[in-house]
Length: 390
Image (cartoon, rainbow, N blue to C red):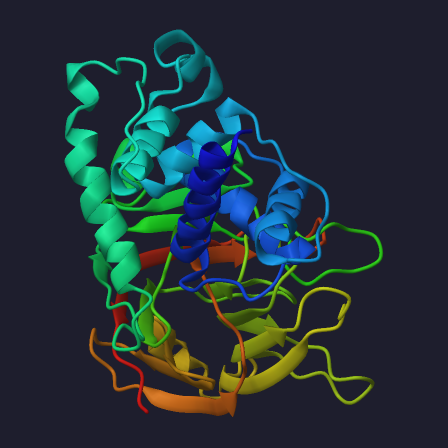
């Protein structure tokens, strides 16, 4: 790679990091960060750059003592350029058939040379991609603005009532699916106007026998540092240990980073004490990495099936979970009642230093084969980013 191309690559990789993490790394990326970066590029472009390559690129760019010179392939450069310029989603076979001349890298390189006052000839990319000049300039300006101190929290507003659940429609609204179970995913619209997820075998709580994974985990990217996230469920009453449904916040999609899980769950394990069945609101935090044991930070019963007041199960007809994040401060809330607008009550407030980049809706029953699945009907989701308190 000649000097000018190396400079263009340096700028491109920095802008890609800024888009992925919301900041420029101070040193080489860790393995977890590199895997997050790789998954993010795949989610947004449909193309793959291996996490080890990304880690090597970051060492080359952010670690002055790194002696090895990196020479990324043109395909990798094109993928990074597609990511930075927010190009339409594709896959490798389609790129080979329609864009094997790697137009986005050459267009990005041309823009870099123009800004440096050194124009070079580039392959023709066709009339259809000429607007990318304008789009690329706008995106680069926005990325540069992100470096300034007044841009401390990206504001996002998104709501979904799940009236349209086709794969294309969900994708157009920013949702993507992880660990698809086709049989149950095809039942997601069994009740009109509701997203139906099922308590399938799986968990993000690791153990010695199973790899963490939640089937039909519906995810979307988030960028705000401070936000309120809320989900509503209808008539979800878990009835066996580990059965639960709710909200999941993740630093990455591999479950190797930190996470927070807020759910409506079931428990009858009392450690040898008299058995007492309960439906509860549970909050779990995980440090990820080598910290294999998560922490249960909230265990708040909301219904006792064996109680003489069993009619109170009606309060589970309309339930909602809310997570408020303001810097390190997390505030977790629950509401439940027969009507559609019961008031929220705080379950727990705690400090947890993490940087979630994905939010997900899930239902699971842990790594057990029994009992049979239960359905969790999600009726509403809302995410509202806001400026962080100073």
